[in-house]
Amino acid sequence: MATDAAETPSWRVTQVLGVQVAVADDVLLAALELKQRGGGQIVTLNAEMTMAALANPELGAAIAAADLVIPDGAGVVWALKRRGYRVRRSPGIELARALLEQAAQRGWRVALVGASPEVMALVSTRLCAEIPGLNLAFTLHGYQSPEQWPGLEQQLRQAQPDLVLVALGVPRQETWIQRMHQGQPGLWMGVGGSFDVWSGTKQRAPQWMSRLQIEWLYRLIQEPSRWRRMLALPEFAWAVLRRG
Ligand code: UDP
Image 1 (cartoon, rainbow, N blue to C red):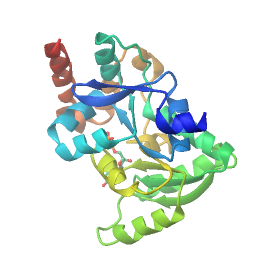
Image 2 (tube, rainbow, N blue to C red):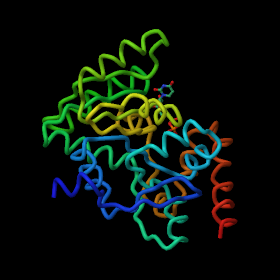
Image 3 (tube, rainbow, N blue to C red):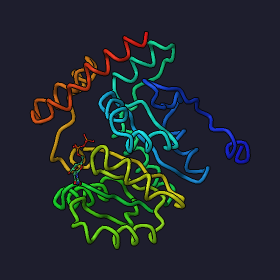
């Protein structure tokens, strides 16, 4: 199994608007397989990010080079369904949490990068209390001064973490990870606003909104300043329909 796995991943790769996305039966198993194969970058793709990738070549290149791109978001799942792929929506926040549980069970060294200093302090304490055995080897908030980053990045590399969760927002977290994970053995994953949610600072949309696939509306009500970014959603739907 180990030798076969080193050659061919067990998931298939297809595209949504030309952006790669994996079709996997179980995204956690796929991530664990990736770790066994030497680690790499995990991206959680939604409609907004797909459109951002088409507009921003640096983000597009980071996603193209990523090792596992999971369909996070009703829009991406819908676009895949139109092309005959039945996949379940895999919210990145849930995969990230499942990976933290695995890390505790397997004795992995974990690094958390990003979010405000207050959120990072809260989330570190909470996660250690909620996940027994979690080894938080390195934490770094996301508002360091530009001069501080190179030294801190060096410390992070030296810590040789098995799992690095990065909350710096899109596109920065993806491009930062692409640069940082080269030559590193761990799993590196962008997690957007997950630390804000785990710290209790922000709420996830209630289940009923998620079932109706209107989580975007909840997010818009919580953060009205996102409206301009959310125009990407109808643009995405239109682009998918136009492609037929
Ligand atoms: N963030 C950060 N440094 C920055 C900008 C943002 O650490 O310079 C953090 C922010 O505090 C939040 C996370 O990035 O915890 C994700 O932000 P957002 O919810 O905007 O994510 P997106 O929707 O862009 O993935």
